Image 1 (cartoon, helix red, strand yellow):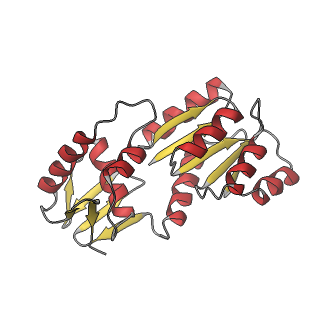
Image 2 (tube, rainbow, N blue to C red):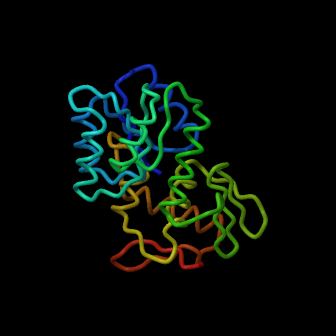
Length: 219
């Protein structure tokens, strides 16, 4: 899953990046509201962590413009201000959740996982598809009850395909959601990763849909 973290405090941004990377997210960082607005409008993020106190353009203005443009990604807002009025204002502007600083990183990660589950229409933290049992939070996969060792990229790809089971996912979409903005993206790598997943799971589990991408059909 690919996230945008919009936070101008360099130390906190580094802490967020490290915690989210440890939780197997791919993270882009915006240092002010103008950059956050642009990235949110041009990149397909799965979720956003948005500080309300951004320079240049404040977080509420960024959020309102995203929602006015009908951008649907879940947004968790951060603020040093703890009043109920700030929380209500943020939620009314289109935020999906709220954390007041200081906060525990584990709580932020848990809230992001919950937002992503709701966005995908799932109530459970795990995904069960045919013989696949995927623990998204723990980063563990089982095939027919047997643990499967996956690399970080294999796990991210399998998770994304599983969360969108039943429809083809194009290589472009996979690339946009599996890699950070500044990563050297190579679509040929996706073919290699799909091949490895098929060997570790089952050759027919991930289908190739000609001209459309890859699909997991087991629901």
